[in-house]
Amino acid sequence: MRIIEVKDYQQMSNRAAEFIIEKVVQNPSIKLGLATGGTPIGTYKSLIEDHKMNGTSYQKVTTFNLDEYMGLSGDNKNSYRYFMNNQLFNYIDMNKAKSNIPSGIAADFQEECDRYEDLIAKHGGVDLQILGIGSNGHIGFNEPGTSFDSKTHIVKLAPSTIQANARFFNRIEEVPTKAITMGIATIMKSKEILLLVSGEKKKEALFRLLNGEINESFPASVLKNHPCVTIIADKAAIADIKVHYSEKVPM
Ligand code: F6R
View 1 (cartoon, protein in one colour):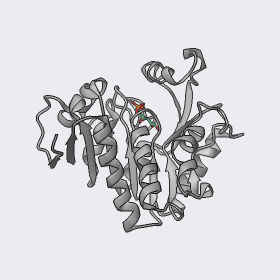
View 2 (cartoon, protein in one colour; view 1 turned 30 degrees about the vertical axis):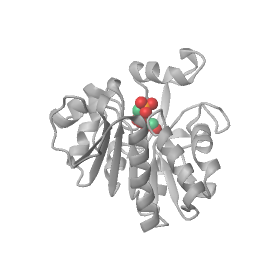
View 3 (cartoon, helix red, strand yellow; view 1 turned 120 degrees about the vertical axis):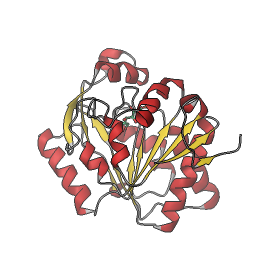
């Protein structure tokens, strides 16, 4: 794993955007895997700024989001479709028909999971997957205990995840308890992975990822089995963890 340490959230966002832009310029038809949540918002802002200033084009890009809440339609403000449109897609020249997110209101959710998994495969897989990490080590909505062989599937969210995500809702009772997520095996099929980690709340998870065993009780640990992972972590998250940096951005 390549580890890049940066000063803070802003620097993480800028560095991550640079990383993504370089790949999009190299391969304008790239298949990007995208995440939601608080972590990538700054990165998406930087992508939008770059698009406005330098005209980086996303017209040919295809995207696959990691997950979607079950029960929320795309026009619900808390759905991940709404999040993606409003944090990124509406402000770049993205062809939204090429943006894919599991449907939160499918008539048959198991069928929707299978359709999504097949769709990714039909496109030749994800070239670069962006990930955040839950404080319990989840990636996508793959909570501790999820099989490393899992494909896109339905999950029951862990109480800690519901608690963490309640900040985006008016009341914790409004947070859906189930979601559709790419599985661990789906994520691991991506050719390259970029994991973003910011803030003290993620320190323990990052420590465990870098120093712990590879184990299904800590889903992110599977990333150590992937041949091409870059982690961009800020000082608050990486603090006194002893690692060999591949790059330390001057602070
Ligand atoms: C988001 C996702 C989750 C988040 C994780 C961290 O699509 O799949 O795994 O990346 O919960 O969330 P934040 O960034 O809000 O701390």
